Length: 480
Image (cartoon, rainbow, N blue to C red):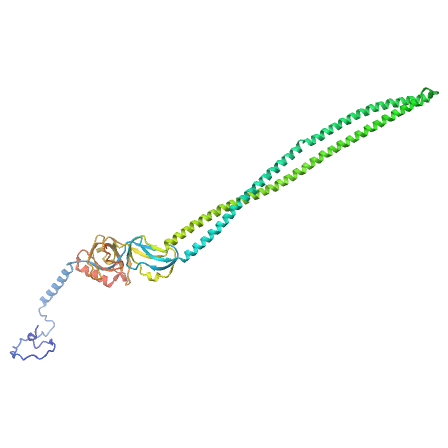
């Protein structure tokens, strides 16, 4: 309303800003007198236009109620982030220190590309220790291989000695159980001696008969001499011959008896000789048995030494083979671990490369994260109050914070079953979709805004949803 049309009695005035003085205009005609408003009623009980006012109020309420049922879009406007579908990690092959990175964060790398150079001092120490162990094991193995023939010969010698002792003991035992030629010869000599004794006894018996005859003759001679004139019948020479004959017979008999006694002594000596031989053989058999037992113990000792050496040889050969294999593995690991090469392609996601540079890292520790970003997952945080409007197959429009990126349209592919809570206590669902990234213009962890297109709902429901989201009633247990 302009100033010229404003009644003078109105309490509202518009004071335009002051401006420079303008050229004086022609004088305006005086305003015509205005018509005064009627005075208000003297009593409040006398309403003015009462029926039209209630009609107006009802009309307004009806209009508001009707407006609440007007269908409006129920799109969900929320935030999200781009995530790589699969993240691959490059691990340290051996403990070492990264001395140089050949890539930087965000670089696009190809399979079999060099990633980093590593210094493996601990691996070098382990290789040197393994080489020393291998040399010592090979030295022990060589000594043992030279010792084995000696132990084998010793065992063979003890076995041969044992066999010789057994053979000797068998011969001695045979001597003891059956008379050997030496004893048989003695026995034959004893038989001859016994035969001589028998012959001598026969001769003695003959001499005893002859003695008896001679004694009888002498007795008869004495009887003749005893008679008177008997000495004249027998001469003294005849008696002397008989006496001489008797003496010869007795002498011969005594000699034969002495011969028998001598032969018997010889037989006893032969028996003693046989007993001595048997005793010697028995003692020799006992000595042989002792030697056999001692030799047997030597055989057992030699066998144990040989078996122990053979077992040690097998063990050392296993250790040598193991050390050789370990050394080869360590050398291969050194050759391959000094320059780390990736087998996967993608974008370098790690942001802590400078922190890892020069730091000692352990075996199997992650050194680099790589992701193939031909396509990226879109993780969209959706308030739980909007879960009825977010389902698989829903259309989502993705806008990027950075300028120059066109709006992308995708379809909700999945919704995580787990519900998470943000810093304000609001419960959120995570809806997921995927967008292609053929030119690698988009990067992981890039923030986005998402508009999930929903069905139209009455205005009052939309207002209720917005109030619930902004007031976050779920913190107080409402709207679960």
